[in-house]
Image 1 (cartoon, one colour):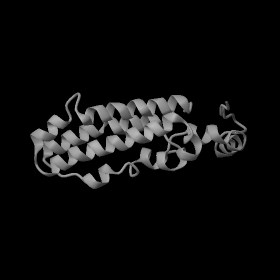
Image 2: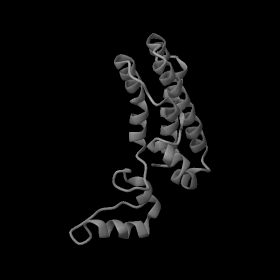
Image 3: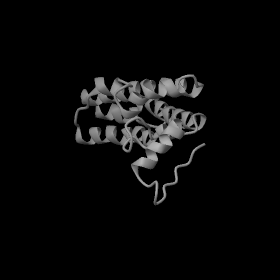
Image 4: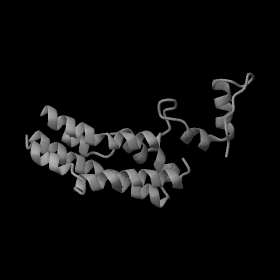
Length: 156
């Protein structure tokens, strides 16, 4: 394991580049995606997917429409792009990676179903679809657990 500790001599980008040469995997997966394009913050991914319930409830309250076909795709969000891209080569052999991909796809399918009901202006039905124990709630919990399992197995 490599730990980056900048000092007066190595502070800044030069020390990051030096660490990347010594420990490329640690650097690539240890920083948030806002700092480096090739990384993934799995805590943020958990928050983002948990926030979908709020977004769906907001659409119900506002009686607005959502892009259900895009929501159904599991490769459009930051986590999905990472799962289908960089993480495949780094962690694709791990069982937790396959589980995460499967649960992530199921989550997006369920969120899309709720979005379609909202778009059809069946707001009471959409609200019921978000209830505890519903397929959406089960898929939401499962993807959060799967992301956590990948994070632990990959030591991210």
